[in-house]
Length: 379
Image 1 (cartoon, rainbow, N blue to C red):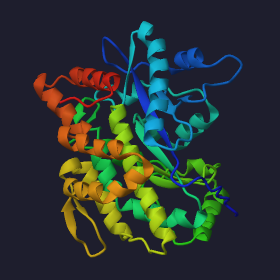
Image 2: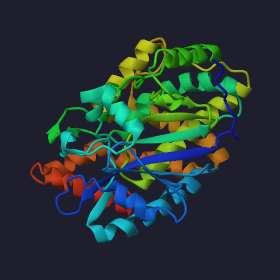
Image 3: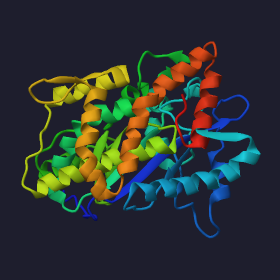
Image 4: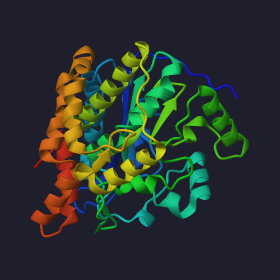
């Protein structure tokens, strides 16, 4: 089959941020998304252009338009957050974002009444019902189809870095899983989710996609739920590695890092460079290490098997990408990655709050709510 890729302006950026709805008193998830979406919907249209429904009724997704800079994307998200808070404040409901809710049970959550969600649950059953997870997706524009697969493979080298920085799902069903990102390993249980195949030619992706349609695995390309995937209709590469991020500053930091990486790849491809690629077995191992150990993960950084502490490699990466950030006008946002390194990713902050409050996961939820309202990570 022919899979059309519509080129975008190089390195434009868009962000999708999944947010949970929680009761202000109990901290439990609140399944009232339909009521909120109906309230925010402008007159005469079916839905708000930037505030969307998701699989579960405890979830709202806010999205940006096509942005040139990360500052523009953050302002776009902030406007949607302000709109949502005005609606939910009188309802006694709060917003939070993390890879998982620390203690609400998956089997008590309600699924949005839409045919595509019903089909997903019918097919995936127990695993599909367990998808009580939240993430952040970042789209970056590419100006030529031939850049897509090399950029995807190169971005996989930094998937553990992005996962470690965003890891925010240590708890599941009120238990500490021992993982920094339990979400990362849960989500890959769905069909077509998890790490992408590393195709060398666009025709190989087309053949794969045709096979998925022919065998009834998917009805639409968007049902390929890889951690990093092409988005042909948008003309982007979509980074879907990250857990839900609790603060706008962290969303901006991760978006800036992703934009800088993809723009750097794009520039190097224009210069005729062949981008380095890790073997699939190294990519798979890195995902597990980042999910398990987060900021303490020792990751494999080249095909020779060289290993580094992920945070040390991130520091080197930030220095290398600074000229790219200047070109993209996102130096401040890229340097916000240092804020994450200084305060620790969310999984560490959540565990610290639990220790300070005698193991109270309700206190953890309250801290996540406060962080999102303030827009900044707390110690």
